[in-house]
Length: 594
Ligand code: F6R
Image (cartoon, rainbow, N blue to C red; front, top):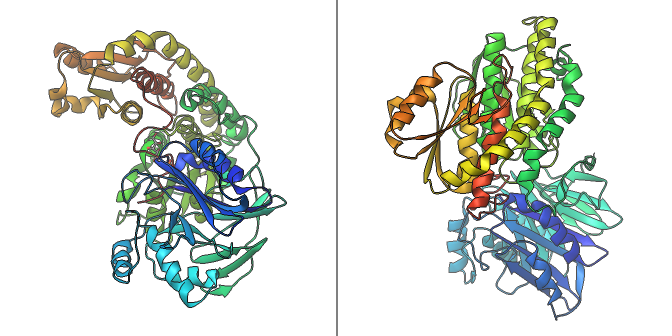
């Protein structure tokens, strides 16, 4: 996990580093820090366990030598070692000459640390990354060449890394990557490195991606090496256009804004892809072979969206689908004629990337991502964007809706292209998709009006159940996930029929049970079973529900509008309980470790 940034700029480095780190906070926010070269040949280090913003105060209070334009920065999601200033990056060697920021996990850190301690090195943190500082320190004693020293040090590592090393004595800066994203960019403002283009997109027009095993030196230009040999700088990729519709980073509550933006995001997406669904072009343009079954591989919210898309394929086309938790994908059997769809908002989720690496050869893989330039987007046979625009709140909301819309469109399009659905039926289904923005807006309005007293009523509940049937099950799962993530309350989702096979034992007087009611007649019995035990039923869906949302039983993506009140229930409760919904404890937006 974690986000890293570095610059060799004309202006003082702190401004760039802190602005970039704010955009990388989605990768972790347990602590943040920067190291900047100073006029006297030392490095000034600022670290905090508060939010990135507080680095500005620390830099403003700096009374030491003038800070220069070269520096490195890091925002952390704790893996090795607790959340403390000591464990915050940048880390340094024994003499304070070498400073390092690292994203990834070093599998052999314990052994290396033991060897380094035995050799006399003094460690000041519990973090695996610190071994890099001491390995480089050792190598600089033999040769003063930082590029050589870092190349040698990374050859001793196993695991994953995107790292930048700064040498205070020479002002040199070297970066390396292996199984963690890192990109480099040049512009008139300077040379920049970052985990993600969003961090440096304001200052550069194009960027280059480090491949596994690359080690580069950042001079006033880029010196690129691979396996110890100089190589050409890889082809530049144009920076994606800055979205004009995105939320400002200054907004108080991104999750609320992103929930309310869903109708607009859905409209934009349909404008982009809607005209290519019923013609089969959306599918044909991907250049993938015809398939007979679909296997979705994803995590969390993306997995829930994948379940909706897979069900649509089975319902509309009679084709089999399976959903596989990415971290458990290893060894799963892939039958002939299978299309694997890897779904990931970020395209950087380590579990998904590992599942891709471990997928059997010879089967087509399509990525459905929110960032086509992500690692996943670059590694697969074809890529489709859910085009939701930047999502800053850690809990996924608008990307879920957009994944479902474009994924369902893709399913319809592939069925037309393979002759399994006629165009007239496809057009009718596409018309249903065009109703979604309005349905989402209506659902938000209903939830706004009706949720406050419900939230008040359930604020003391320790646990929640979420139920649905058929296409509603995936939405119940998404409602439970949102609630867990941002309110820290237990929440379990079940197909409603499963209730009496165990979970009903959890229901006592007042237990909130949220039902996605898409009109399946069997739900009435399940609701009665809960009521008989004193459970507090909250229904979301068809007419007569606690919160009514527009639904059509035949809609290709099931009761999609129901997700809006589910998201708002979680958010309303989080706010009521005084939690920061945008940055829930222990989580990060992009989970880049497995
Ligand atoms: C839930 C949430 C996570 C992510 C999961 C996968 O609100 O945000 O469950 O859905 O970590 O992330 P991506 O989609 O980036 O692979």
